[in-house]
Length: 95
Image (cartoon, rainbow, N blue to C red; front, top):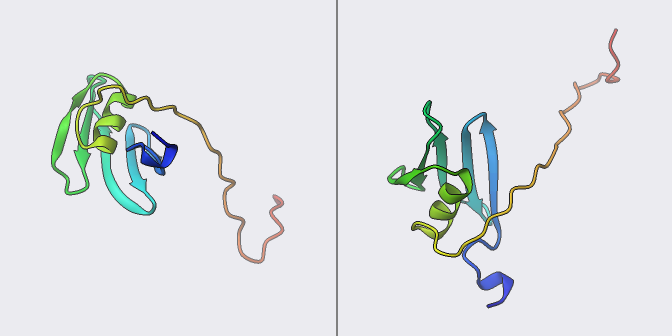
C-alpha cells in the first residue's frame, strides 16, 4: 500500500483549544474531537454525528479519519508552532 493509499494520508489535525481538535484532509473537513471532563474523547464526523467514545486521542483521531474505530491505523502526533501575526504598521517591539 503506498502512502497516498492510506486513509490517514494528507490528514491534518489542529488543536483549536485545549481538548478540542479538528481534522481535515486536503482542505475538506473530516470531523472533530472533544475531550470530556472525565478524560474521555468524543469523536464526531463531518456532519457532527457521534463516531464514538475513546480513551486515547489517537484512537479518536483514527476513528474520525477512517470513518470507523481503528484496526491497525497508527497516528503520530507532531507539534507545529506557528508564529503569532505582527501588528500592522508596528515594529513588533514593546514600548
